[in-house]
Image 1 (spheres, rainbow, N blue to C red):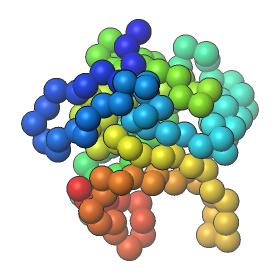
Image 2 (tube, helix red, strand yellow):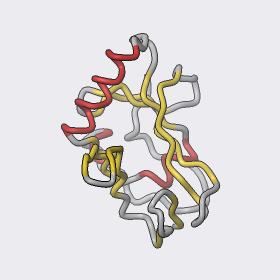
Image 3 (cartoon, rainbow, N blue to C red):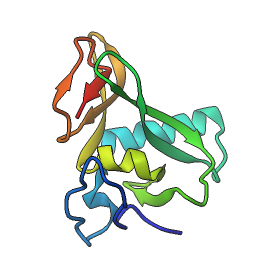
Image 4 (spheres, helix red, strand yellow):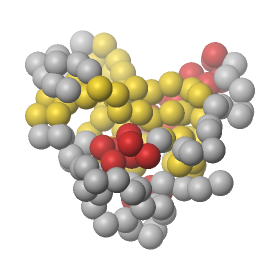
Length: 132
């Protein structure tokens, strides 16, 4: 099992220096998000072998968007436990997620996971996509 603290090798965008303290230094999951992820896992009857996949995909108004879903880890994924959530992320997505905090928010406009990503240069008007 590997963790997110291993340095990704790619040319763009550059990854900030890795803190050897562990995966929590790369991606953070708030307590509220952790509770919601585990609640969804239990409600949906998702197997313990499945992990929460964090992914950045091309598309959306601004160029990239976030994707979260339960998935089987593959041998090329970074795997770790963050705030009680088994997480997997691919190398390409990790480059865009370093320093990101994932929260779960509920408000007048609905509820959902919110990504606070310091690497984002701009977002679209709807807030569901970003550019770096």
